[in-house]
Amino acid sequence: MKGMAVEPEAFRDFFGSVPTAVAVVTTVGADGRPLGFTCNAFSAVSLDPALLLVCVDERSRTLPALLGSEVFALHLLAAEGGEELARTFAGRSDRKFDGLAWRHGESVPGSPVLREGVLAHAECALESSVRAGDHRLLIGRMERVLVREEARPLLYRRGAFTAWEAPVAETAVEAVTARVGARA
Image (cartoon, rainbow, N blue to C red; front, side, top):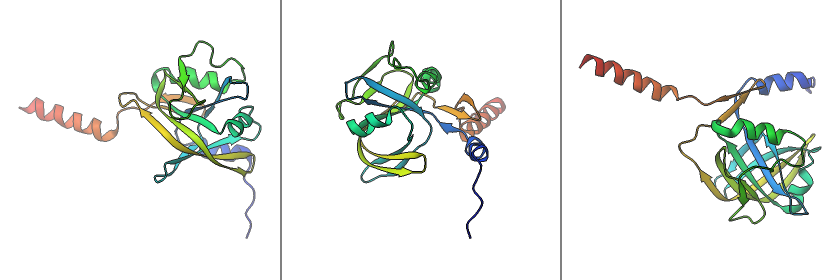
């Protein structure tokens, strides 16, 4: 039995109800210029080999460069400095990299790597591409990963950015330690 199609607003409400990490995907155009966009639709795919998934709107101006260069970097944004990056890369400017600290990827030549406002990044080679409705699913083979352990992730929920707070378990341990210490 085929169900009734979900309206776009209900679709957005459903997925917007849960906080997601915020990322920036970067690549290089045919002219060598760095390009990128903000993304919150990405996921781990496989441990062996290390693969990740990025969902890209078919109307994205960056999609042809991603498919042409076959390289990209996925940057998980940090709470500190990440919101500005997310807003910059969500825009339509051709000058998104102006004034930003970045370098070329070490393991995947051509993939621009952001140096600030980032919790972690993965340099990827395009493994495959699949059309799915109005989006393209890009599978990237992770060639290099760098994680800043001390950074907190930037999150997005219902149109607002927020930072990850201390996990409940850590907060509970600190509270118990404080109470035990007060009794001693």
